[in-house]
Length: 288
Image (tube, rainbow, N blue to C red; front, top):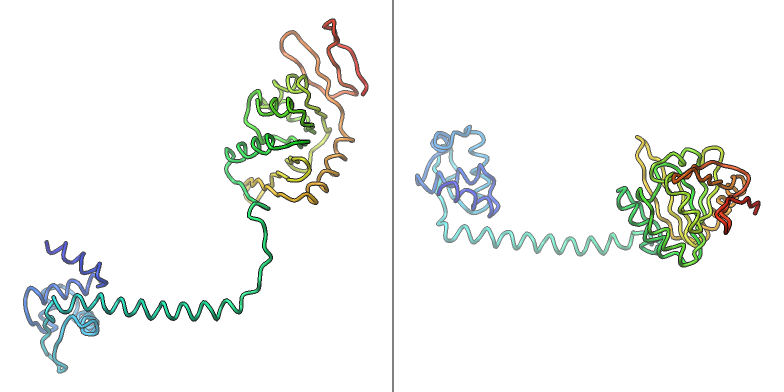
């Protein structure tokens, strides 16, 4: 019970030491500083500091002379006064906050309004994949990608890409050679190309992972200190068009992909043309 009372006193704003000294006076009646120290186990010096705080809060009363005794103000009067004091203190702080807020507002430099979704930073790989899929599904004209491992999308056949291709959206990808060996890409390239994706291989390292959507928004992965990766989404047509010129440059410097059918498992390598299956099931050569 005593412990519960002490907790409730602390909920009213008393410090733990104040609650213990106050309870000692409630249980034992009027006591001097030395007696309180003996009952509570606190040093005399800290007891007098605590008593002064309780006097200021109106919970105890005592004489001013050395060795005077202290007693509690009737709790039914003193404890409600704590709430009144807190309410008055809160009202004062509220008034100060309102006046200070108005003064500081006059000093704030107006900031340019920026659309909420103009720039977003995505840290979680799963969230990156989900956003990448959604942006591809929202594209109406084109999706253009620099493919560096690990890629934006989830490993697998990529049904999102096939849905986008069926809608007639132009899908182009410039891949590093290393991506051909990525289990999330290599086994599915033949299928993607057969569905209509255009793929070229760059003989070197691409500057970064990049995706452009209708050349109006950008998805770019940035390497941060400590090898951390942050993916940034930027909805900005001018920037997207500028990066589109970069994409076109690397596209022109890359070689079309050649798919060699080897039984049931397609092989992939870079070459000068794209091989397509003719109507009779043979592989013919195209230089387009």
